[in-house]
Image (tube, rainbow, N blue to C red; front, top):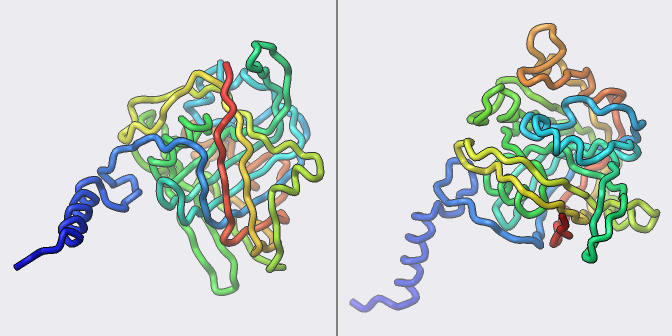
Length: 308
């Protein structure tokens, strides 16, 4: 019996994929975490809540425990407020497979920028100070590519008959376990989005057109080599990148930010690692917020500018 070379090649490729973890991009996969350099092109559903906040002192929960414990990280920038944002994203595909994400941009920060000729100037840009993702491959790559301080979390999603969507996020780093071995028992964040008006086009190119600088400036990251997956890589240089998001199928709607009992420990008003518990997640935020859902969005993260 003759066996075609194409069939043999297919069998070998399938076997190799199985040995390397196949298409399994979950935290249970045995596939090693490899660096996938920028640029990245992704697709997914983006939920955005924007807010304008005064330049008051940031709450402790603006930073995750690992980054908060490093004075050089928290003092690298000066918070000035202005436009902030919370986003929840369900990536259906990316260079490292599908994953979920919760990110917090409290607003804009002053920071030192050094150009190629060594000249230092002061700049002001937004920064992601805290972010959770559902799998290890994007966690390590996000930290290495763009200094985005990703940590692992479990995401629970509920789609209701009235068209609303609820998500609850259970981080690995709010349990008090430095090794971040598993998710918290109570949600650190939860929200329900109820759509009102759909079929709208939206692109973050709008920010540039109206004079908003959406470049993310991210300081060097502390690392932690003791996690089970080895995903918490550190860095020693600054990175800046302009992310892009665009969709022809966006919907305006309301986000309900009622946190219920959340993950507060007893009546302390804080969780296991000292993050404050606010009734609407963030100080000064109302319970009901107008926001945007972008369906089938095209998302991009380009090559970063690096200095320092």
